[in-house]
Length: 337
Ligand code: PLP
Ligand code: COI
Image 1 (cartoon, rainbow, N blue to C red):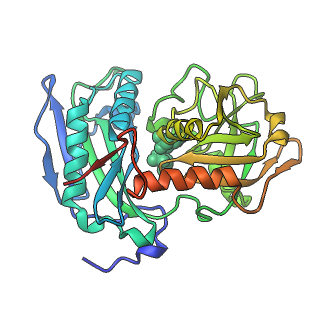
Image 2 (cartoon, rainbow, N blue to C red):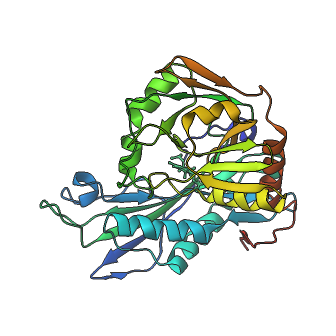
């Protein structure tokens, strides 16, 4: 294995030693298979190629100060992948199969879990694709569940330093009653044009508004939106955003800190009333926001150039649990033995 520069990792693909595969054929799941290959061979008529039968997940494993490796809330990712399967008619991966695959792939690739001091982590990417062929628009009868891993650093290059978002009203990432609430590849394809434009114009991500009325905040590219207003943790309630496991965890931690949790529609103008604003997700962790630029109205909302007090508290609490530095009262982590 080449030596890895753990401190300077970005968020991107690199090859680990092993990935895990499991095929669904004849109405049932097979055994977990260990592979060293980066390739899969598929039928040219596979539904993943033609009709987008594809869903994925993202979760992380962390090496603690005590040397132990902890995976964060993997059962929630299993449940979400099942909801994605229901949404685009794929075979569901049962929770025990999902968690066994995650545990196995992390254990096999232990050497790729970054050291505690680096602040990096092992990103785990479960993937489910329709491999059976269909040229009529129908669900496949065969599926492949695959789990790959790679060591990663922060998703936004700023890490925990505040970053900038942009609002454009001419793009939607998901329809109001569409697939925004599940984690299917098509949502990410639909976000590429706006995302690339945002990057070229110097922003980290797009802050999407609701597709129906363009009145309310939806989410920030590949992460949920949250804001701090006085003693409240405010986050959008919307049928077209991905229910983030990080956001769910932060709501619990904020409530435990005595804060009021407001999960509701957030009118875009309310951006002027927030004390702190952030993006949250597995890849993004907590990314504080220092500026939101409304490109259509040529208006900007600015926040601190340093992370706000509550964002710092939430970040430290979440990271403390993930790295085993703090008690884990809700059993969110699984130690990989
Ligand atoms: N929103 C979108 C669109 C995402 O892709 C992600 C990443 O998974 C999130 C939010 C954050 O979700 P989670 O905290 O479960 O990673
Ligand atoms: C994640 O946070 O796990 C994501 O999936 C976000 C992105 C890399 C798609």
